[in-house]
Image (cartoon, rainbow over the protein chains, first blue to last red):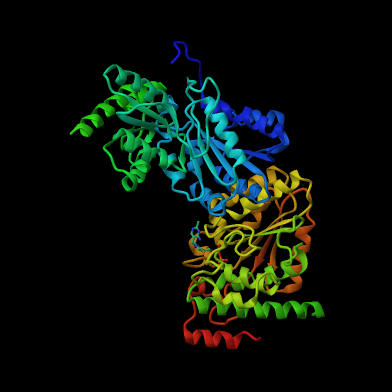
Length: 317
Length: 274
Ligand SMILES: Cc1ncc(C[n+]2csc(CCOP(=O)(O)OP(=O)(O)O)c2C)c(N)n1
């Protein structure tokens, strides 16, 4: 990795990407908002296409059902808010979008505990579980702003419902040479033969740093960026399990209901191997700077490396 | 005075009520009460007001009917059969394995069902999104949303009511079936939403209220009025009788969602002229 890293928040991808997509003529967009368009950056779309931008006030349930209505006419609809506030409209997501399989893309910012100072109420630690529980929804968590942009574009051009979680903190840009995102495909960021670290979101960069530490200890870790959580790249997981024999999953989500749980379920039927999980323990967050709260939760490169050592010990047994 | 055209409408409502009872009796489950109270409203809407083409349900220039009280599928499917969207024989598959006719509305099943429902309170929002999308395209079509009076207790209804007025949406019509009964009990005992008309007016809607929801001429006049309101959304509040048409079901909270027994079925069909 390069010595000097540029950083950016994944949420910053939304507004500019939507403008670019509408300008390209490839999609017929409508953007709906519930009074957080500045934070999610969707309001940048309003500056260019005010007639295609609809405010619903602080009323997420109405916004989500109305998004379904727009989509039933053939529009590609982007709805955004903070992740915790789209959770406010779960039944509306289910009835007005998921079940009729309408073309609505929910791009929610401030996912995870890295929302920081606002504390527990603003920290979405359950969004992946909720959206993954909806048949027909695709679910993605980009690892950096470049991937976020690519994922938003892929979702816009794909048919059916999507959930994309973006984040508030400025995190290192990994894909400096351009995006490699493909729907439903894991991206191998580092080859390795002793174990595989499967990560999403800001844990991908932390996993790469953990792999550096492990390499110094003589352990070769493969790192998979699992940016699409639904549909899960089960083939890449099976290959990793067969070829490396141990798996660590790292995510900024409740550990018992997120990516790790889904990876474990997939591998249980394909090729079970020792696994360890790095995620938010069974608790709510608290205030602090974003990296402090991540540290409280154990979501650090150190935490990932510890899990890797643990799984290696079990593998050797 | 009853015109020839109204006789025609009357025979439609009679057939539809018999379909409703047959479907719920056959399925041994389903919602008769709220289907019977909205029968005239939907029959007049589909016959006289709604721009639609049963032979081409995907017609881009069609108006949209949104069933927000998605438990009233016996009425919705009977209407679709009566107006030629589906064969009448299909109604006997209601709520059964393999049928398109699920217990609550599912978008596209069959074509002519424009939204998924069953969780109350969402239809007005969904219809609002459709109408805003039509307006963005310069399309003049209408969106009609049918809700129950119990359903008015859902907060989302008022989010949608506020937003529709804020966005100066017209060609959006809320139809409220005020039968005074919800699932467990009378609405006034459960959570009284009165005065409903004042609430909608205060939210910026044009309202016509106390319309006799079983008088075909009155229903047609009210729907015509609502269709022509401009500059704001329109709301029609119909006073109706839950279970209308079968004496022992009328105004009886027990016939919200329970099927008739064998004996009740026979009595009901005797009371509903063919
Ligand atoms: C969100 C939600 N909560 C509860 C129910 C269960 N439920 C089905 S019908 C009903 C009562 C509806 O009363 P009303 O809106 O007056 O309908 P109508 O009398 O016209 O059938 C209830 C509570 C539901 N369908 N959706």
